[in-house]
Picture 1 (spheres, each protein chain N blue to C red):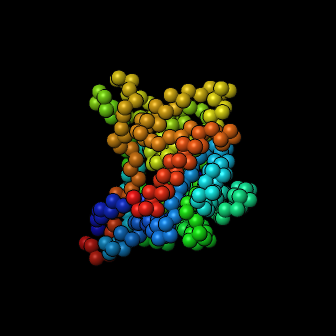
Picture 2: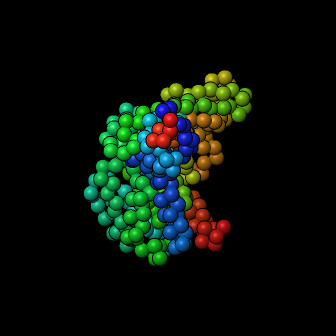
Picture 3: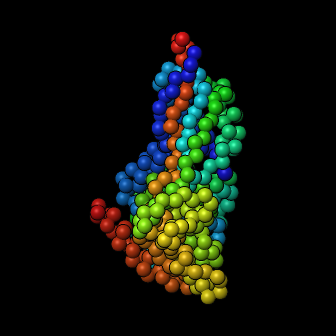
Length: 224
Length: 118
């Protein structure tokens, strides 16, 4: 008996993608614009979220889903202090969020009451890139002290991005960091990527990011 | 490490397609993995041996076909592969490039046996 070859041609993570599409449908049904925030540990994800809430809370209600590998609620507690709803998802040691984990988080989030959902992925530049969550945009925070060579070393994560934040610009005078070299690498991987240099500490650059986000959310709500 | 969920994905797709084809046994699974998709073959094999136990996929061979990452320069049309770090065009040193392959991450085909096949 000789083996028979059966063609399949199916993406290995197709089950995740199907679940991600359900997440997207649920978000759209509630008119919630969603952002998947990725970064390495310490790039300033939570600080960036807090600054964004600070700038937006007069106009929009945000909800935050925090992904962490351990059962800690440090990040969620900081968000809850601002008065915005936050849910913590513990990945049980996994290096990234998957669509099914976000689905669990969405069940607990009061979607009817929020305009924007921020999902803080696990701090990691490799794994989160492979798992589509169903959010409307993928955003990466690359901080200056991490170095200007990151797009060259971690090309994957730059491929699927819609927005790039360069954080900790206030540290540029103190570290070896060639922003042109960094941006050239990004340009090779994701030409024309929308990019905002900011400092969460000084607030520099936030006006441009907030204006872009407000415009994008407004277009979304109007069905554009 | 996320190889366990990847391996579970491979098993689910293989079992579903084997069942549809009326297989009694899966002998081989052909995977196409681009250089830009990070995955460790040995870890997948390790998990595979455990999770495929007592299924018709038990003992099936995992065949990894690695596809290099290829870039094409939009200015001088040079095509080149990247092995390690991303680098600009080796011919004109330009950064105006596009990635033409290397992001593949799919199960291409399975090889099966059927009980009634002579």
